[in-house]
Image 1 (tube, helix red, strand yellow):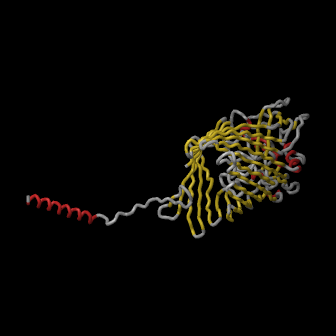
Image 2 (cartoon, one colour):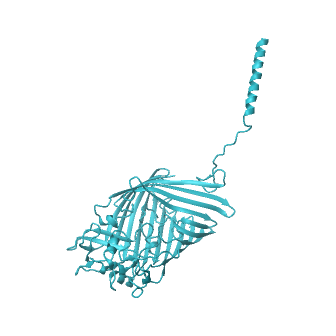
Image 3 (cartoon, rainbow, N blue to C red):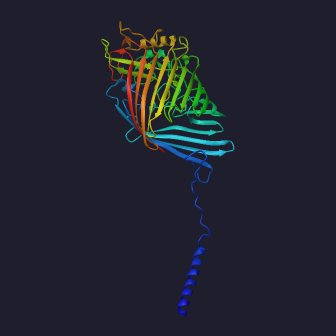
Length: 506
């Protein structure tokens, strides 16, 4: 027994000695694991970047769309190009698949929060992208610091819902729309109780320059009219905008309350022509002019029709700044063909074009000044929740563009320039022809959404568009696209557009 005890004690002593030797080889203390911490300062979804005091949030969505009877602009109505001509070259359905990714960072400093925001999309669209390719878009990229915003952000002129008071389509006219952001330097002051004001300098080049027509160069052939029917801004002559010299000057006053919000915006826009003869700087140019636009936007929440329901409306007026009424991705010109009952006419046609201004001349000796184009517009939606899973929006807009008497005479050929000198554009005698470039566009639509689970929404939308143009009678026109050189009745046109969408937000 004594021997057994000695063996056990000896074995235990040996184990203790071995364990002590191994313990001496290990670190005295394991390094702590650094976990990503939740940042609750700026709402859900933010985390601290490890090792810093900066919070970051990643987000975005994946969307798949199908448009029926649209144009190459995806969910645009069939109002120009092959879609407007309703020929066999148009795509009756257009698919688009899109991935959006955004990155939001915020850091608390002694001067307030420093914020950066980036939003980009990767997408593939029928008729636009190649088989293996796609397209990339940068929507937003800006820094905010001490009330200032630097970079590509939502315009200070824009309503909070931009061009989407309740719709899916990107082509609801009737107001400003820069949902993909505009380069700017702006300052916003907060006065408390939901009252704020902003002043901004914004880059007009991509979003805010409409056409500036020199009607003298409509006489150079059929390029002007043919280009307009194809969807370019060349209906009434050469588009003669010069390079940008002064950014648009934008101001905003806004009140946010529990009942909704009210916003008043104004903008000044420089109209600057190139040369009377676009290819010869010795011909001179008309004097610069300033256009302007104003917009009022109102959102009413907590209305009696149900929880979460709202009404969003805006109204605007522009003089020499038509992009503030017909903006964003929308083109400046429209050409829609249809049937006719006029004797001798092949088909009917409605065409129209917006602009910031009109002038004429081939040199300073015979050139005119710029005649600004005016317009007004309304846009809005009623948004209703049927249940936590179903909702609908009824939306619409009305846009009116007007040319003054001098501009109308230049476009229609009253001074020897304009449409009457386009080869093949010949009014048919006795048809009641009249030339008036003023036009109106009315739109109304309905979208219904189903959200079976959180952040997954399926929706169906239908949109009706009517182009009310003011040309009348029958004219002989040159061949354009697939349309032959024939006589066409000038009259209003309309079209329907459908959209199906599924979107997953994260």
